[in-house]
Length: 159
Image (cartoon, rainbow, N blue to C red; front, side, top):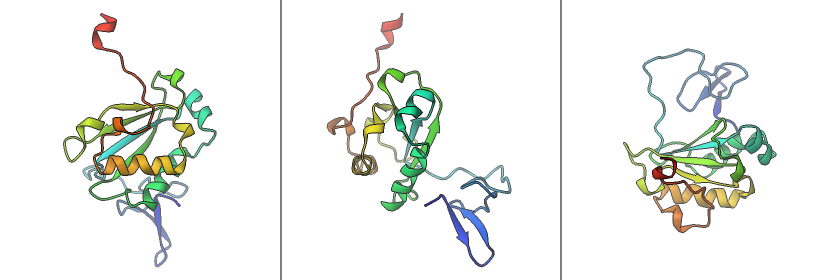
C-alpha cells in the first residue's frame, strides 16, 4: 500500500492531500502550491534511517511499512493523524535504531508524550507498533507502557 491513490478515470496518481503525484514518487506533488499548508498531524514520529540505525532495521522500507500500518488502523489522516518521517543521525547510535516522538501541542498533541526517544525500535513487532500508535492517538502516557526509552541527561551535566 502506498501514500497515493489511483484515479482510474484520468489514470493519475493522487496523494492524500488531493494533489497529482510526480511519476515514480508516492506523495511528491507535480504542481507546487506554495501557500498550501501541510496536512494536520497530532503526532510526528521521526525514525532514524542513517547508517547504524538503518542497518539495524534490516528493512529499507521501515517508514513506508509504518505508514501502511497507520492506514490499516485509520490513523493516517484526520484529527489523530500520526505522521512518520525518516531522518538522519540523531547521535544516539549506542541505543540502536531510535525514534523521536513529537506531539503537535499547538493543536491536539499530548504534552506528556512530547519529545520522547524510543530505542531498539527494530525489535518492535507490528502488534507493538499498533499498541504504540493507539496509545499516542488516545493520549495515553507511554511512560506507563513497555517501550524502552533513551535517557536524556540534565542540562547541568554539560556546564
